[in-house]
Image (cartoon, rainbow, N blue to C red):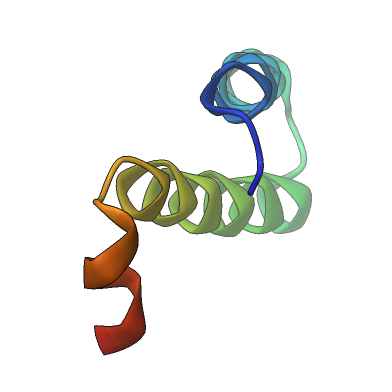
Length: 54
C-alpha cells in the first residue's frame, strides 16, 4: 500500500505544476493525474476490507 504522505506530496507538486503551466494540453494531462491521485488518496484511507469492492 502506498503511504498517504507520498500521495499528498505528489498532489501538492501536481497542483503547483497545474497553476504554473501555460500549455493547455499539458494542463489537461496534469489535471487527469490530479484526479487519479485524488481517487488513490480516497481509496488509501478506506479500511482494508472495503478495498475488495473496488
